[in-house]
Image (cartoon, rainbow, N blue to C red; front, side, top):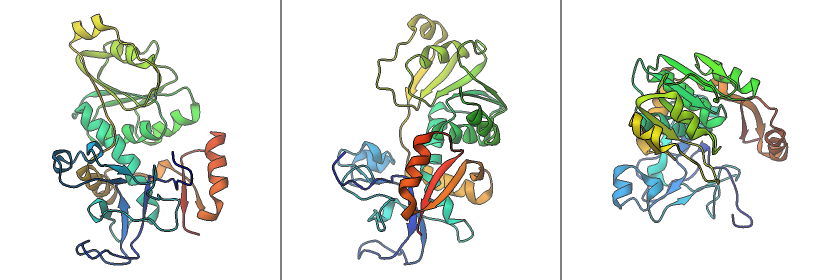
Length: 281
């Protein structure tokens, strides 16, 4: 990342200025931000897959200052108004919940299905919430950390496990791996039923083996999921507003911008419960 980069791609805020071509936005509106600057014209943008635009830049991951700045410039088409009664805290939670929603959409989770979610960090917890919201009958969350397993239960998991190794064979319609570990794909293959779906939502820098005979004989579908679409941002906000998804259990300490060093220390210590949120002082 470039020196001097201002991080923070999970962001929202109050509009304090509106560009001349920004349409009907008004100052004072609270918005959640989809942190991609894209061309808005290519076939990927037209389909809503803005992260695949050849010209895309990520706000908070490059030269475009993110949520840890006092001010951020964001595309009007990637700003999404929050209902007036919604707490400002939820603005920064729309992005991570959109990641979980995109994964559940990729897995094509349907009502009555059984779903395995491996990893109960930020992505895993939002994935659990959406799997339940989509009507999954059983959602098993796997994480070696007891506190994270407890958080998964608060987000709607019906049962939890400390390890995916030895999980029930042929017991799930879909499995979503939300942590980057190379051994997890094979474990998921064993756990899903014939013609099951496996979605990889966790980034792994290591070579990830599969067991091709199992995948072949079961006719498994294996795909990867990253980011989100504008429509998924709208779906998250609507679910927050209606109560279909409750983001409250994922909220951890809320600190002011002047306490950002303390916020990073909390995350680095790995003992904090929930998402550490940074807001204006």
